Amino acid sequence: MCAIFTRGFHGRRQEPGEADRLPPGQYLVDDFPVLSAGPTPHTPLDTWDFSVEVAGEAPKRWTWEEFRTLPSETITRDIHCVTRWSKLDTVWEGVAVDTLLSGLSHDAPYVVASCDGGYTTNLPLEDVTGGKAWVAYAFGGKPLEPEHGGPARLLVPHLYFWKSAKWVRGLRLMAHDQQGFWEVRGYHNYGDPWKEQRYWGD
Amino acid sequence: VTVEFEQRRLDGNAASGLLGAIFPFDMSMVQTRCATCSRMEPLAAQLTYADAPGLVMRCVHCESVLLSVVHGDGRYWLEMRGAACMQIAESSA
Image (cartoon, each protein chain N blue to C red):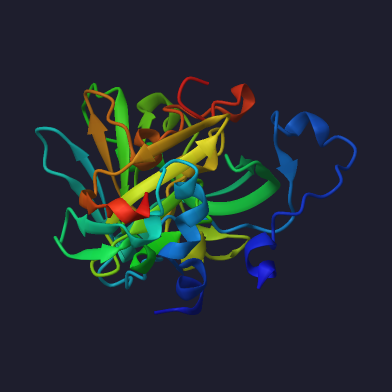
């Protein structure tokens, strides 16, 4: 019984060279803990789509088939959860947010990611552009499992992992910052793991 | 309904420890009306997701978020926009 909730939360010993990759207050894990604030959505791929919205313009929209024809990349990054586990060298495949935003004319400085199940998270646009963020559909060479955010999740590995929204369905470019699910509920608006920006006021 | 769905979803009693640290009465029997679907149940009968970065309670009928509690760094953050009203019996204090 207990194993269900503690599995994955045991830290492991650091190997040489790993110490400087671990932000303050974090420990290393080898498995991939699952944290969810609600039921896991199971959106069929034939009804899934991804949209990018800018005020005053018709939304850009891709079906799953269209999305999977976009140029994709293999991304290897360390990830850091605000609940203190970190995982090194995770390997993803996904479409760069730069690709999804290409051709849009806008001057929006913020973005909100919205997801199946109602989850949202907010980011400065400059944190999802310039090769810093992806919409990922595969992890470890396999399709992303629903419990980890499949069919697709946002991947913003330089920020705490609640910003890498599971089950992401769209990005809305915003003139003003609008706090997301956890940002309203006590967690930091930006979430830099190297500055330990966990909670309001950190 | 999948296996991992069921594993992560607990009943409202799982929230009693954290809520008991904030409220001066037993929250498990507090009748809570969902701001989304208007149905009312005791908190013990609502759904709890306790392994997220915070505790999230959802309506047992429509799964809308009723309330959340984040605890860390010597502080609690209580959010309850999804709970339209709570009925607290004097005898529970």
